[in-house]
Structure formats: structure tokens, C-alpha cells
Image 1 (cartoon, rainbow, N blue to C red):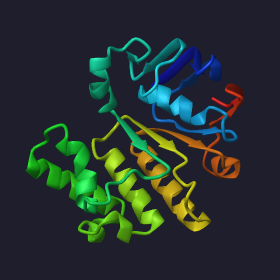
Image 2 (image 1 turned 180 degrees about the vertical axis):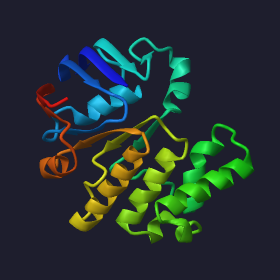
Image 3 (image 1 turned 30 degrees about the horizontal axis):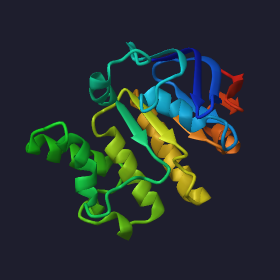
Image 4 (image 1 turned 120 degrees about the vertical axis):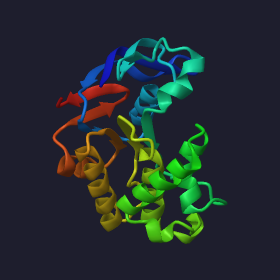
Length: 220
């Protein structure tokens, strides 16, 4: 599913965010990327999502070498990937329904298909009764579930989550992690970046630890 071979990413005056990273994540895995702030976790997810290009090395995601992908092909590549951000990135002026439908709308999905899919995914994450609410009226846990619903509406083969529980209290964090595990059980490969080592150890044996842009432990 994901293969990185001797990948490095430099910023600014050749400051390495990642240095000589090689790893393999098989299809269907539930993987955590852990490490302190500045370790390179978010950069790694950005490279996999192709929102950043590697300074050197090869990255293959679902058979696509994204280190060499044309700029014009990136939007099509991203359709197979869902992304969940720590700060949710919901549109406050749109309802829960419209936030989740947005991904389908921008690719021109027929309205009747959009409605069916949005209702299905909102029911699955337990938010159908909130479909007409606006994000500011929701709790942090509810907003994160909306973000997850939006990320999985296209049935992605890969879901990337950057600190998905970082702004939540322990009970809500546990709820979100259980939801992500349920998504993984349906076949979606999931990669989660987190500084919470205890959470990672509770939910997976597959943990990649980064420090100073390098892999410290890889329990693939």
C-alpha cells in the first residue's frame, strides 16, 4: 500500500524534516506514527498525501509513484485518500450535511447519490440527527466525527489522520479511536500521527517512532 525508499525532505536552508526514511505499510494496516513535536510526523503524512514533494527518494502509494507524479494528476490521486486534520477544517457556514457532501460535490457526483452516501455515512458515525446543525454548535468530538465522515465519504483506500484526538478529552479521544478502528475493520488502511505514545500502544502493535526526522523504531 505505502512504500518509502530513502526519502528525505528538506526545508529552508537545507534543514531536514525527514532524513533517509524507508518503510513499508501493507494494505489494511492500522499504523501509528509517533514522536515529539518537530519529529517529522506531519511532514511524513504530507508526503504520502502529495501535498509536499520529497527532496530525494521514492514514494509509492497504492501503486502510484508520487515522487514522480505530474502536478495535474495529484487531484485524481488524492480522491483515493481521506485526510483527517487535528483542527477539523470544517466550513462553519455550511451544515454538517453540506460539509460531508462537499467532497462529492467538487467531483460532480449526482445529487441523489450524494444524498444517499451522506445519509449513510452520517448514520454510521452517529450524526444523522445533527445533519442540519452547523459546526460551531457541535462538541469537539462531534466535529471530529464530521471530519471523519467527510474523509471516508469516497470510500478511500487510505485514511491519514494527523493528531485526530489532540484537542479532545480522554473519553472523546477513546470514542474517536474506536471509530477509526471500525473504519479499518472495513478494509481501509489507516495511518495516524500522534504524540500520544500510550494511545498508540493501546490500539496497535504497528508503531513507527520518529525523532529528529529519522525512524527510531519500526515494528512493521
